Length: 460
Image (tube, rainbow, N blue to C red):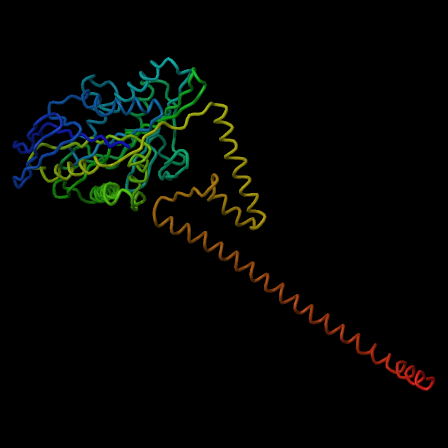
């Protein structure tokens, strides 16, 4: 078990902010924070990056270890979190993804460069494939940023692969330049808007997903790792941002999903370790996508971006408390199952063709074609893997399955009752006919019996 890596980063003061600072550094891990009531709080995190910290330092400490693990088939997630205008997108992207000053490059371009350098420097890799996907969660819909026609991507769950985005565009990228080109194209499609706190405020949560598959030359085996970088939209207060109309509705949705994220973290870090608590992953698309990262089979790093100004003290305190809570999340990162290419193909073939076919064939012996068709939508592998996107959809789906099953059973019972009634009628008719045939025959035999009896009597 390992803890989430949590760091804080304080951006420089803006021209509009009060010059009084609410942060006093003690060492690279500890600082004192003073809120708007002049109460002081001491925070200790894995690392604190102050105003003069450089982008490279953030990358080296926060992202580099997770990137290396992802190349070695251990899933990883890196998240930037904080108030709107606190420097999340700058930390993630820098001033721009392409043609950017080397010192100002953000986490994303540095991760891309480092990933391909790490792969190319490995001597045991015969071949590798890196696939890139980009999505944003806007107004509680998952949109494909590489294909705008896919405006409502469904979130699915698979026993072996975990959380999946069904039908999302995956483009193979062979080097850093190609990856950054696609990333820039996708970012141009991201929803942004202007507020009083940020001229280019993100109006959605954005996730960058890398799937790294390697074929080893040494042992002829294949391994796959996933790396997800998430730039969250910032929490907002309408009185500070001046949001209204559509921008206000966007802010409400953003705050609601961030609240759902907080609820998941609270559920993961509270209660008895031996007692299984309900974790409300399905309360938002954001928490559903991050389900594997939050206490699952993935390493996770959280960068809490904050303003050092007393004018934003309440929002900064909320961000820091969120980070302290997240620091107690326990995860179980481990390398993904490694198989030879041949074994992997055979296993996939068996799962798809034989196992599912065997289950459905058995079902056909007892169920109608209509029920089998329904089950084909529910059964994917040996077991039920059904992942609707909300609690309401789960309830509706189960009600639908139950309703169809009950209806089928009722129809079967009605058919059996009709057959029983028909058999009873047929049986009654047969009895009556037998009785009618028996009585006349008995009447015809009586005179012969009497005559025979008299004859035998007198003879004796």
